[in-house]
Length: 239
Image (tube, rainbow, N blue to C red; front, side):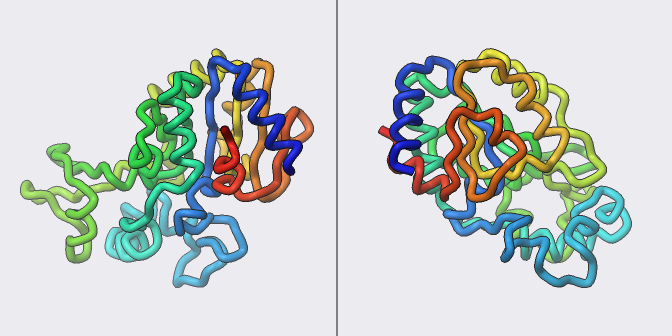
């Protein structure tokens, strides 16, 4: 691994347009479970499977059960950015990193100081009334009894992409444009099995493709640097 991290440092030094594409594994060292890891959400037992509960149709059909699960298992208010989040913000501050494209909804990249963050699946920190579109913060959701309601009587929905819902077209366009321009793409903490997001990697035609993930991914063979380790640990060694 030491040699791979050295190669990663050298690649970063010679790159001028770095883009980071990350998933749940970026936040596990902040105490937020990975959906698909052994101890993750998908291996726990509930009355309904998690992928059913966090679907659009279930939200419409059973908002009380949706919110009971959402508040209990999707919100980690006390989570703090780890070494990976902080290093990415630092690289952006230096002008090296141009964008963070994330599948996470926790807001930790912004908390660490990153500015150009494209949240493919939305954020727990943004919530809107479905009737009048009034904005509500995370605390309002946490402190609401049952289904959060707006002052107008409408239901307040998190600005997160549920199963059966499409990604925001503007966010997709911006993400793809960044990947197209990148001379270095770092894929971190993602198994690359969630589409359409994982397909965005196909737009990269730059020099350095890097994968940092605990398990093997479908892009390892195409990458010139592959590191199978915790991303926070790896990024703490980036100069």
